[in-house]
Length: 107
Image 1 (cartoon, rainbow, N blue to C red):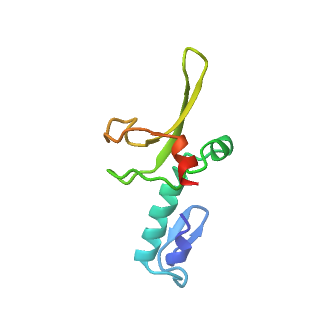
Image 2: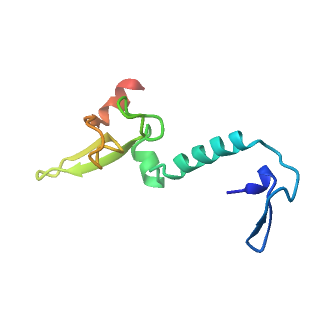
C-alpha cells in the first residue's frame, strides 16, 4: 500500500500520519485498494491469457466473482476447456461451468 497518497510519511518502516500533504481522500484510497486486491487475485497467467481470452471479462451471475479458466483431458485424450466461477470450486456458489466454446459464439 502506498499510504503517502493519504498523507503518511514512511521512513525505515516507520509510518508517520500527517507527515506530508495528502493527495487523495480516505474513501478513494480504500476503493482503489479493494480494486488492486481484486486484480491481484486475478487468475490470468501468460498461458491462461492465450488459452482463456475472456478470463478477466466473465463474472458469475450469481455471486459476481470472476470466472476462471479450467481444463481437463478425458480418458480418450480429448482436451476440454471451460470457465467456472471462482467460488464454485470452494463450494460457495452453485453456478455451472461454461464451455470455452461460448467464447467463439460471443466473438
